Image (cartoon, rainbow, N blue to C red; front, top):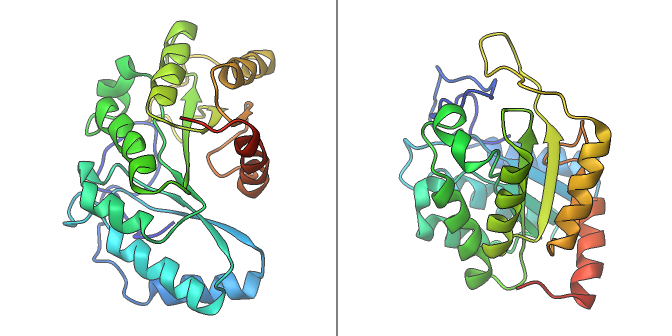
Amino acid sequence: MLLDPGCTRRCTFCAVDKQHVAQPDPIEPDLIADAVCELGTQYYVLTMVTRDDLRDGGASHLRHTVKAIRRRRPAIRVELLISDLSGNCDALSSILQMNPAVLNHNIETVKRLYALVRPQALYSRSLSLLEKIPHISTTTITKSGMMLGLGESREEVFETMDDLRKSGCQILTIGQYLAPSEKHHPVIRYRHPDEFEDYRIEALRRGFIGVDSGPFIRSSYQAAKLYIQSVALKKDRPSK
């Protein structure tokens, strides 16, 4: 996770530090690149906190990190899990110039719960960001994720899937929300594994080319495997 230690948002589901926001560490990109070389795998997911205090939301820091990695390992595949960048299209374009294999931005929950769960975010802004991606980069696959158990209804989950597809989202992850502490948003319901399988089938039926859905699924769960599967399906069934 880049741009630590703190986040400028106050999402009620998240345990990331909200008190200590520091200037981006100029040596972090090189440290990340060193770690990538040491680990030696072929696919990496870089995530970030939301930084509304930075003019570009931290986009330039992501660019520096990807550049540092590719200087050492040019053929590596990188997936970026980004914030909404406060709707900054120029910042989004600068990130996509790095040609990430996947650009992920999590919708997190259904529209009705945004004011309660993501009070500083906008459902429409997240959809708009996802919608812009294929217009800027035709090669980058778009991805998003949802948590269940926050109080959403079955119909609202389907509506969110439809909204994501209309925005061009191609890969979806769905997992069970687990409250980090008693001070965070409570778990309203633990969903049965069969429900997650039902949602997986429905998401595929709605046109997603890759779906992981289960109680313990998270945004970066088996990301490389899901990417490879999705690329294979995309060749046979190009998404809009």
